[in-house]
Length: 349
Image 1 (spheres, rainbow, N blue to C red):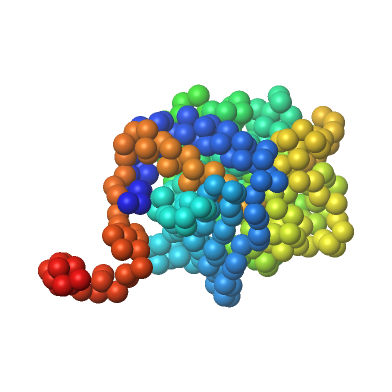
Image 2 (cartoon, rainbow, N blue to C red; image 1 turned 180 degrees about the vertical axis):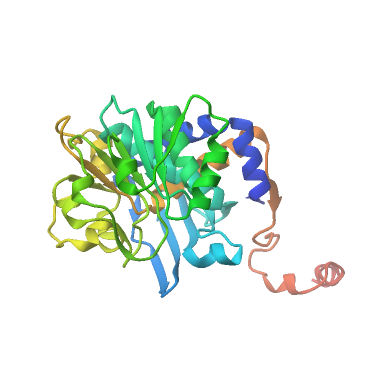
C-alpha cells in the first residue's frame, strides 16, 4: 500500500513537529542530499508554458529512490480563488518502481522553498546579518520570513508588495511573533535600504527589474526566489554582473533564472560545491552574493523523503491502493472482473 498525505495531514504533520523545527530539519535534509549531488540522476524539469502560466514535471532519482513533482505557476489564479502554485508528488522505489508515498506538495513546496533559501543563506550571507528586506508578500512570504528569523537570527524585516492587501495579510499572520520587528515600507527601494539580506519572491511572469543596481549595498546577500521560468526575472542584469552568483542546477537556471538575461558563459557557482566544501562561497564581507533560485527537483526529493519518514514516525497519513495487488502478477485482466467472478475463475482453474 502507498502512504497518502493530503493537505489536512500535512498541516497536522507541521503542527506536530512545530513550524520552526520543521523548516530547520527540512533545510538540514535538503543540505544532506545536496552534498551527495553526484549520486543523483538529474535533468531540467519538463515544462508546458502558456502566456498566463506554466505546468511542470520535476523528476530526480538516486540508486534507491525516484521522485517527481507536478507543479504549476499561474499568477492570475488568485483572481479565481486559486493558489498561484499548486503541487503534488510521488516517492517510489527504484528497484521495483513501487510508489511508496503520494503527497500534497503545495504547502510542502512553500516549506521546501524557504528551507532551501535558508540553506543557501547559511552558506553565503554574512554571519552578522540581522536585517532583511522581503519584496513580494504573497503565499510564500511568511515562510521565508520565519525561516530567516528562527534559524538565521534576522530580527527586523522590511516588507513591500505592490498589492497592499498582500502586505496586510503578512503583517496579520506574523503579528504573533512579537520578537520579530516588521517595517511596512512604501517602496522596494525603501525596504532594501540598509538590508543585510534581500529576498524577492514575486509572482508576475514578466521581465521585471525589481532590484536595480543603485539599491545594492556592499555585503548584501540577495535571495532571488521569484524568477523561476523563461520570461520571468526580478534582478537587473547589472546586479548580477556585479555579484558572485550561485545556482542549483545550472542547465535549468540558464533557462529559467535571472541569469537568462546574460550570456551563456557568464560565470556562476554550483551551490552544492559550496555546501560540500569544494568551492568558496562568499569571498569577503563586502562582496554581494546572489542565490539565483529557481527550485530544483532534488529539493522535492528531500522533502518527500523527510515527510515520509516523519509521517511514519508519527503514524500519520492513510494508505491507498494506488497500484493493483499482485496475487498473480501476470494476470492484470482479473481486475476488470468482480470479486465473485474472480473466485469462480480461480476454482475453474
